[in-house]
Image (cartoon, one colour):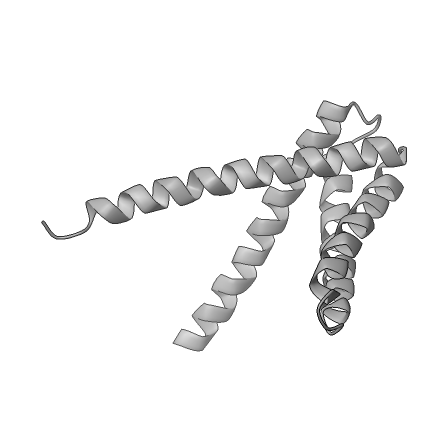
Length: 127
């Protein structure tokens, strides 16, 4: 397998792992909010559908000058909440709380990874 093939396989593997981790965070958030019938399988499906639909909406809205990015961000949030509501058969309020907790978990884990990576980069600098 050449370099290009390894890059494609690595990229696909990163996407799959990213979806599984994001779905895990969504499932944990759904459990915290006490959404009945929340399962990891539903979280995986909601994550995949949400990423695709919200991504398309955000892409389209970013072509609107000046406010497109803000509209895309807001539309992405509303689409994800709507998808969580439908996949988990819950109320809008619980779906929004699940999304918010999911978002907070992702930010906290991202900051932790960034700090660990930053510290490890400084240990590799020449003295």
